[in-house]
Amino acid sequence: MKLRIIASALLFAAAFTGAKAQSSIQNPMTQAVLAVYAEELAADPSNYGIYLARADEYYRHSEYIKALDDVTKVLQLAPEKDEDVRLRSYILRAGIYNETHRPQEALNDLKEAIKIAPDSYSVVYQKANTDYTLGNLADAKTGFIKLERLNARTAEPYIGQARIAVKENNLGLANELLEKAVGVDPSNAEIYVRRASVRKQMGDHNGAVGDFILALSCDSKNERAINALLEYGSTNYPATMAGLTNAISTAPEVGMYRYIRAVVAQAHFHYLAAINDYQEILDKKIYNYYGIYASIAECNYCLGNYTEALDNADRALSMITDNASYYVVKSRILRALGRNDDAIKVAAQALAVDRQSNEALTEMALAYVGTGNYEEASNLLGEAMLNDAENATYPMLRAWIYEKYLNKEKNARALYEQVSQMENFYLDNPRSLKGFALLFLGDKEAGDRWMNNILRTVVDFDGLIHYYAACYYCQSGDLDKAMECAQKALTLGYANYHNWTENNDGRITVAPLRDDLKFLNMLHRHDSIFGKE
Image (cartoon, rainbow, N blue to C red; front, side, top):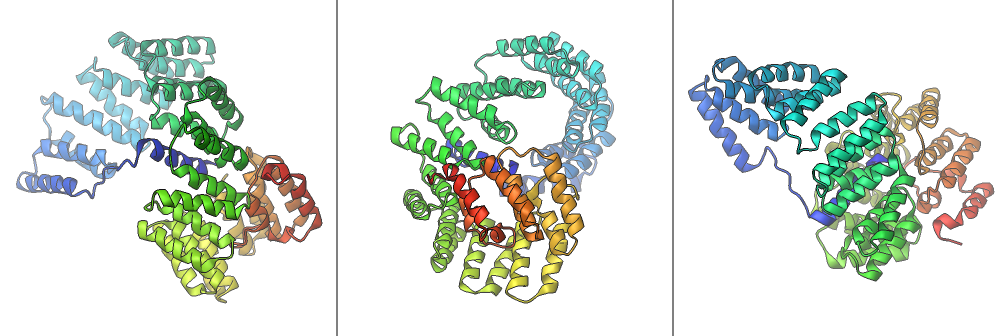
């Protein structure tokens, strides 16, 4: 699923490019600059140049509302003859409108900018893309053709025209234009990323995956290609894996391809395949990264191989001691081994590295549940809720503790209601847990509609959706349907043996099936996906 893919993408990007600190509006340097702007505007409120400079600063930090206020003041104050300032302001405000999903307002400003600078490449480019977004294909095509006239040695005119050709169902022309785009600069990784996006639009999934890999062959640290490829795996797993397998066969000593394949496999619960690739990397020494041991540890944990998992977690931590996620993995393994006191200590080490780690807070809370310290467990989950108010996991776990251990039914009900109101009813992600909350509030009919809608409308690529469905029907009391969903999840390759057999954290589990001989036989028939043959 998408959330797991994004997490894997971030892990991979960190592995290859190192931690990349993002500029923050709270940065002391930025705050000092903003303070100077404020002083100058206090002295002269009509200084539109300062408003524009501050608007630029706000925009760079994604403070779009503040940037919009300032740039609008510029356009109110700047005289018509100051065309340079007005041009910059229209372009900036159009960018703000596009970032805040207001393309018609953006187009209005770009039309004003075009009047000032009709042959500005950046203005024509922005307007063409905005016209495309609005469905003004004729105007967009005119814009992209003009871009080609202004500068034929860039790929964007051809990429833009290709996107329009796809909309017009002229795939032959689209392919010709894409070839022109690549021909402009065949060693530029970004061109392949852009071509992949159009090929994806065309439904050419194999071609798109191939382009992501070509981008990485040009620039192994291209994060757009890495993240796009990993996310692509969530909806086109076979094409993604086939493309990576072909790349590995062509360049077996390039550890990056094998590592990405392992990450994609792990993200889709194919843990044996992931471990094989991780181990191959280590054995052949084609890529040296201590995080591989943590990844192997997590895979083994999910397969129920806790001792082996613990060995690999310790190996990762012997190489680096300031990574909170590695401590979290170790804490989780220790809980599975019944060593809750040790799990608490390791979770504390994770929090010492990152006090805001919700994974560490959750692990410590669940370990406290294992020791009978329910109040402290509840408090820790409350802290996690404050850190991330949109994640349903924390209130659902806390409600379970209130309900099962603390005899606080009203508190539990309030949390279930909170989750039930978090997002739209027919949300297509079972991890929203909305239907579970409705079920636990006593509204089984609404919960059933939620779950049935997901099963009816969302393609399950890796068994995760049917695993959640099995959990849901276990809790609703429909064990026959839970068994059907479990069978489907296993058939699709959902190989998290820990979740199938041991996970008792909260109420979202398949625990009611575990005493059923039919379920145990079903698991046994799928021993191959768990490596237990």
